[in-house]
Image (tube, rainbow over all chains, first blue to last red; front, side):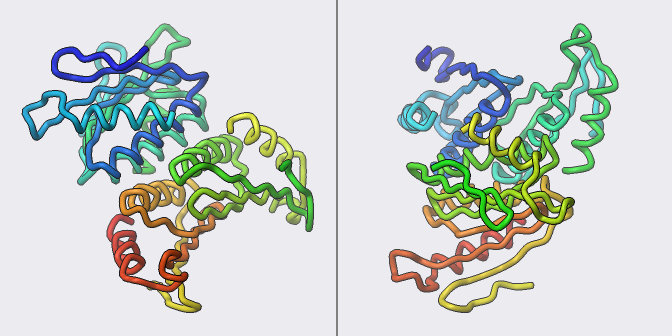
Length: 77
Length: 77
Length: 77
Length: 77
């Protein structure tokens, strides 16, 4: 599944083999988010991770910052 | 705020000073969760972390495993 | 490179593409270590991670606990 | 203990109550390091963390980048 844009948000769901893989991925995303000072809303249950991206400072819409972070997440996974 | 039980789930919301503190706390929770093989549903946006605990194997109700993990989370924070 | 046993320690060095990959791997190892209550000595510089395993309680020698953790690390990587 | 400068390196050792606290601290340091693109050499055994900082690009000496990261580590701990 690729990133979906709906309701002014970029959304993607990931499924891993187990919690260790899921949280390891979340650590990668955390490092990218803090690096770019652009943080996701995300939710995890065991092996599933959902990520929502939009830009709060611009009125909660999808901006270039969201597309850039989405691309970087897809590269590090 | 202490843990609240509603809809067969233990729930608590945490607010930190920034993302680094929030994700550091999430790492503590991840270590506890994997150690006890009992994993939360949790959601994060920047400095906010929400945690929902219930026991899937028992029909998604609150059990002793949830109360134990909730207590341990309150100790490590 | 596989694990090497020398001076009563299991040792392995890993090289990743960057720090994000290295620290993501370290997070996996941390989750395994806390789960088994058996913790490595490890060192990191950017994309390099070195791990030393032995069993303190048995007089700092290599035991089955070390071989088990080494195997699990090789599985999650 | 404060940071010590010796052999062209800033060095500090930390002792925590357990591994969970130590690795949670390491996660904070990792987030800072990646944010500033300036990474430590560090070593951990259970509740102990040692950090060495210098600037590779300047010939492995202590620079302002090291002092800045050292200060930020002391703030987030």
